[in-house]
Amino acid sequence: MRRKELRSEYQVKYRYPRYQFRRGVLRAGIAAAAALLLEYRVRGAENLPKRGPLLIVGNHFHFLDTIGPIHSTKYPLEFIGDAEMPNAPMSMKIFPRIWDTLRIMQGSPNLDAMRAAETVLAQDGVLAIFPEGHVHKPPLGNPLPGAAFLALRLGVPILPIGTYSEDDWNIFGTLRHKRRRARVESVIGEPFELLNISEPGKLPGRLEVKAAGQAIMEKIAALLPQSARGSFA
Image (tube, rainbow, N blue to C red; front, side, top):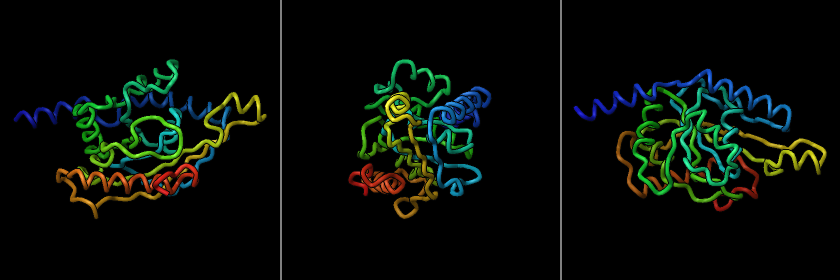
């Protein structure tokens, strides 16, 4: 009975889609800023599924990489990400709070966020997650288990999106020194599943999660420049 009540509680709290007006305003602002300040190119839009459930995965070389799934798709997105955002400027930390991302704390079980994420996907929602869990300079690093665990547990299709800026998102520095807008590209890969690794609904083991994480990172790597792929080339 307790489990059923808990499921109902999460379905009410995280009824998909949420905050469409608020998030629509943010999306429009991002589109306007990208058109004004960036040379932003999107490739692979033909790979976008018409509907969820869908787990979007991507790289995280800069805190602005979160723009990639927003700007290159039209889905009502839910995000799950780092609550502390240590590499983001203080002025930018307000935006995930306005969007109301599902926040996780590094090094903690994060059961509430994971249940919320499962609830979103169970409603045929679209959830974006960055498997590495934190911002870092290229190339790709090893993934945390969260994205692989979710994908295996629920058996949902996975959509990789690689976002890369040859100017490291240095928007105003590029305008000033190179006399052009910073170049950013988001490449949308083909959706894939992990049916060959684990049976959906089954609690995946450590080796299955590791194998799934490797497969996910290889798909992301294929969408990035060779220099940014690291050990997943």
